[in-house]
Length: 202
Image 1: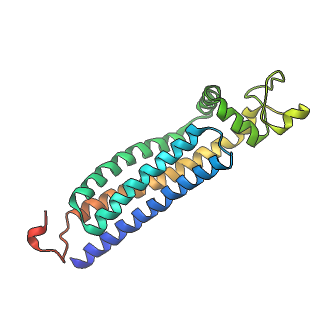
Image 2 (image 1 turned 60 degrees about the horizontal axis):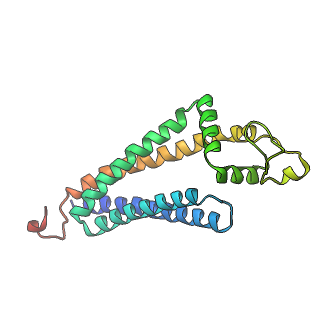
Image 3 (image 1 turned 90 degrees about the vertical axis):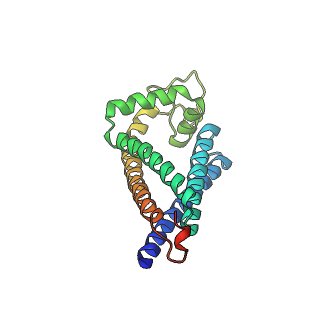
């Protein structure tokens, strides 16, 4: 009984330490990208930082709950993580199942809805415009000075399939670790701490 309790606790702590590391990495990369000017959109950087902070708080709650065998923290951690699992599994499956036509449609919608995203893409990929290059507009790409730019759609579409499959695969992997964490939390929460009094078990 004591060995099972300890093993479950250690596995749960290890998973939450992994989540803490991932969340700190997300926050750090987004802040670094914004500070260096790689991301001109505050919404993109702020969104990534917000997700990182949320993941950090959830992982911290799980870690504290696992270390202290805190019934209330473990219960809320389990519920929140299960909801995150549903969302992440759905998004990951969509990334893996999306067709080329749907990719093109979503890319064009995203391009038309954000000027800052357009500038980021044009600057990083050295291209101008989405479907065609308009020389009467401004462009952040270096190639615009000598009018040798190509449209961005072709360059983006060459890589977007690989990126979506990569992101979908990573998301699917983490969603499986989340359902594992939910199961471990359920098992661990219903075990009695061998160091505690029987009357203290809920």
